[in-house]
Image (cartoon, rainbow, N blue to C red):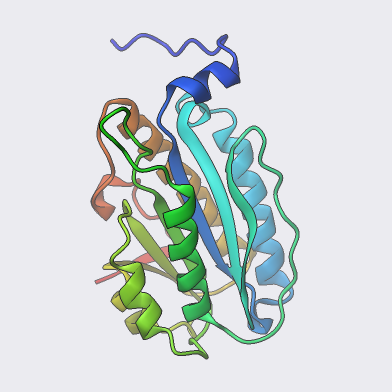
Length: 228
């Protein structure tokens, strides 16, 4: 049996001695997400943080960033260790600039994720979770091409509700899931699954491995369908 984690060590010492596992949450905050969907996203992020803060594996490695996109894309929270992370507030309005989000995501990964060198190992490959409920309103394909050249771990795209275009998301990543509706129950189920997936990822890197396939993540909840 594997020994239990020594959670009495200070968090500073953990950060100094562990490679980071970056996690990027990329969330559609366009006008169609207003009301119940956007509130469910906020609650989902809070629940994710609460869960990960009780996970000793996640505490050692996980750093989280939140990027939102509507008529523009913005990073509301840079890559931050989970004990220091403050969940951002945001509103829903505007259009669906997915290309801008992919461009910003590529830039932040290149800037924030530490690469390995001859002297030391870099961060683990980032886990990326993208959620959108609509169709892109900008020229997203060039930025999709650039994003796919960035070294990442698994990228999961979530089509929240019937109006999201899964074919678009399939061009970004082969790992696409769909929620039949974009309501509180389904969105919070998605974020609970994301939390479990990040936990699995943190355990995997603790053993020296990384998540490479959707099948290595927890099973999809009933509210979520895997798009094949």
